[in-house]
Image 1 (cartoon, one colour):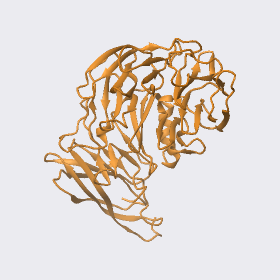
Image 2 (cartoon, one colour; image 1 turned 135 degrees about the vertical axis):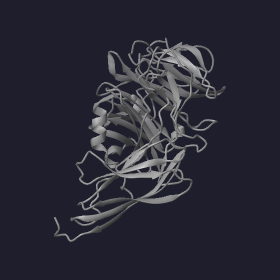
Image 3 (cartoon, one colour; image 1 turned 45 degrees about the vertical axis):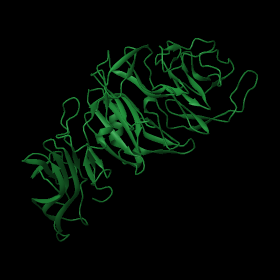
Length: 462
């Protein structure tokens, strides 16, 4: 399959394991049931040891046992519009409503409210130059403050002069090595410099606008990858190093699909796993879609049946990197990193909520040759689909790019090794598109190639 040959790929992972397409593995639940859906979380790398911390939409903070999924109540923290951040041994949790100041959670004990002087009731924040930068507080939505510099504790008084005003309401923040990005609904500003204002010292920070037609209102979409920041808005998913911005949606040729999906969003949550940007979108009609971007190739594919309302990765740990997703309506966390590396020992692949993994893909409508009719005799599929006896893959086609009803060409059986079969088409169209859909769950399905036996007729034939 040549680059660009696939039009829509659902529940397959392209070119990662051992084939052009490998069916995704099933996700599994990673926690017991909480008192509400999980809103945000973090894998905290305390010096005393790692802890997976997540809070519910009822403001309950839980410590999650990553092996058994058991939950330990650690107190009350506000629901955040973003995941918490960590500075040394302090994790900082923001209040999405701006009703209270941030809280600090450490390796032991309950949450500690930042009750010192001048602490803002910030709704968003990040870490930059070893200090917490946070803003978006009610009444001062356009301003952000810096926390005291180490070794002064976050719980101490904050400097009244360590504040910077921006051009609009702050909707998100992200810190890179040399710049601090300040997000607004439709623009991005950046801070450059090294000396943060303290007391009578004004510092050397410079505020400047960098993007006028891209921003975000979804701080849960903000992620980091290789000294870049990724974020989403109605125009697409953008990646920037603080100087240049690129739209991954446009580069992946899914702009129309993205605009329709974003227009009907109810919630968005994203994380980075390996070199993939994984963004979960729950729609207002209750449907959901999980888009995955291969950040090296700038190619997109989709996972179904992952209604994630929160998402955070646990990379850089003593264990394996994982993605944790709060599954809507279940009050549980799920581990979805297994989707990228399916285990053939799981037979069949069934998601934690009991839904079978049934991948499919569609090709674009191809003319196959210069303009004119073609005699399309057969369609060939090279594949390996491990399942019980019976048909496992169905192949359909359309003869016009505007058709919405697929015509069945037949089914392919289950296999025990690499196999190539053909099905008859017997049509005389101008072009053709194919859909290959899995009929029953398997332990793994590998697609290596789809081919067509077609011959061009005289171009005068109409």
